[in-house]
Amino acid sequence: MKNEKFIIGKESKKKNPLRDKSYAFAINIVRLSQGLVKEKKEFVLSKQILRSGTSVGALIRESEFAASKADFINKLTVSLKEANETEYWLMLLYDTDYLDKQNFESLRTECKELIAMLVSSIKTSKEI
Image (cartoon, rainbow, N blue to C red; front, top):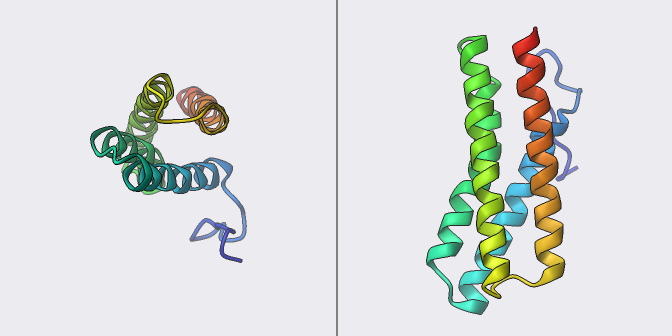
């Protein structure tokens, strides 16, 4: 039950894949940041990726209560920018040997999936 996320409100039993994926990604980013600090004693880059990686989901949550369609699109667009920034930090951590190949590929795949979902959601919202 701990891992199940539901939309609160009228559709309380319907899952939201973007919300769920971004939350799971944020958990993985928090764990990465914790490991970087504890095991590698890396504090600056760990804070950067923690900020951008957790912002993705926070902005998606904010979009659920957007004041208008334009506000909704804006929140998702900022979330997309944060996801893109997170991919940058992942690449930098990998290329500077703070992140091993397996963890890098796993997190980067998650990040790219979020980027694709956000692009699709933004595009669909603009068409409606």
